[in-house]
Each structure stands twice: as C-alpha cells, then as structure tokens.
Image (tube, rainbow, N blue to C red; front, side, top):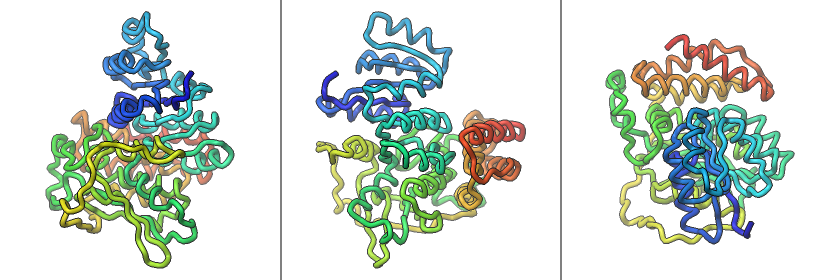
Length: 385
C-alpha cells in the first residue's frame, strides 16, 4: 500500500459518490478508492470497479451479487453483498476516510462502525445525525474519528467557524434554494406532480433528496444535522430561502457580524474541501465564482404553511428522543410511495405527522431503540399509505 489516502465510498453510484470519484481522479497521487458500494445499481458499480480497481466492491441488494461476481472474476477486486458486509468493510485497517454517501437510514450502521474503528468520516448521509445524533455525538467524544461535513450548507458553516470560539456564535443561518415550488401559490401545491417535484432549479441530485428538497424536508434534516455537528441549540439555527444558491450558509456572531461562504452550486466544491481535511484545501482548476455575474443575491423567509415538512422537522427537534428517527422513517416510506405514484405530494406531510404522533416516545434511546423505532415507524407509515 502506498502513501495515498485510501477512501471508502459508501454509495459510489449515487450523485455524491460519482462526484467523489471525479475528485479522486483529479488527485491520483493523493487518493485511491479502497472500497466502493452500491445499493441496487450493480451495472454502474461494475463499470466503476473496472475503471478504478478498488480492493472491494459491495452491492447491498443481494440479488445483484452473482452479476457483480461474474463481471469482476479474474480482477483484483473482491466482491461481497449485503448491508452487513458494507458495515464490516469500513473497519479495514487500510482505510483512512469513509465517505458516507448512502441514502437514508441505511447510512447509520456503517457510520457507527467507522467511528468505532476511528476513521475520518466525510459525512454526506445527513440521516445518520437526524436519526441518532445524540448517540453519534457520544461515540465521537470517545473516538479518534472526526466528521467533516459534505453537505454544501454544513461545509459552509464549518469553514465560517474555523478560528472562531464556540461561545461567540449567536446563530447559524442555513440557506435553501426554495426548490421548484418557491414561487408557487399555496393553493396550487395540491396539483404538484412527480415531474414537477423532480425539476430542481439549481442542483442535480438523486430522486429521493430532490423530493426532500421540494418538500423542504431536506432543510429540516439539515437543521437537525447542524444541531449535532456544531453543538448548538435548534433555536439558534435559522433557515432562509436564497434562490441563487451562491451563499451556501452563514454564521452570525455575538458582536453582530456575519460570515458567509460563497461558491457556485457545484457539489464538487464541498466534497473536495472535506477530502482535503485535515491537511487543507486542494488546489483545483474548477470554474470559479465571478461575483460580478451575480448582481442580485436575494433572501426571504420560508413559507412554513406551503412547506409543512419544515415545520414538522422543527417539531421533531423540539420533542427530541426517538421522534426524529420516526420522522425520517415515515418520510422515506412516503417519498418512495410518491415516486411510485401511490400518493400525492400533499400526502407526504400527512403521513409524517400521523406517524410521529403514533410512535411511542423514548427520551434517551439506545441503538436498539433507534432500530426498533425505525422499524415501527416504517410499518405504521406503510399501513396508512
């Protein structure tokens, strides 16, 4: 093994995973993909394996294993399948950084194993902190692991806080594009179609996160993530709509000054920053922001009535315990149902609220409690579809 940093990319076939591989290609003397994984996209996983030659390629969906095994037979890449294999592989001693780009609850178990193994984590799976923020924070305090946020908003806040004292922070300000429905009237939201919701104005993302952006659930999750990442009360985290997606987030300090991080809406930027840590920024020839091209940067308050999922997220934070876990589970079931044309757009918050109101509250959940809550919430949400 050479001196390159060995990277495990959990979810290499998704948007974040593909862009992470782009960056590894930019810096072949700095990084190498040691592990790549996919959920069901076995064909793309095979293509990536043949191009990047990782030590391991793992598909979570066991039905794709035989195809993966046959395609990579005779290569140096070892293959495996199943969620347990993904959770186990991140403990490999060769791995330096784990990029958690899996979607949803599935990212929790491997992130926990990575923390136990003392790995640096480039966190793109916000649901890990949404579901089990208290547990993850406790584990990090006892581990050599460091979490570097990949989300553009949290990466921006991280950069704004470099060199600052925690006690000097007055407020975190998360920016949101407003998604495809920012200018829609409230009464028109009842006729939203799947095609409408998948038409994000600024970012190219996977289907699930694109729907979460359209409902603003994604921003609610980011509030929860910021609470745990930066150790700040949710009441000190504000969401503002910024349709140009140039200011990625801001920090207000006790003296009234505000620091902001700006950049083009390109996820390569926060991924590149996270991979460069703790050593520092990676020089790049990527397109640079020309501020003179953006004469008007606008900000507005989010409409909580038009986007009830944001209000629901704040309620889940207020209740705490296992309730955010239940909300995440209900949202995953509802979004999947919407993407399969089983429910309407307005049904997503209804299912989330009903599930949150039904699940038994646990103030200080253990890992087993999170697992049980996730299962119970999914079952209940499924029954009311």
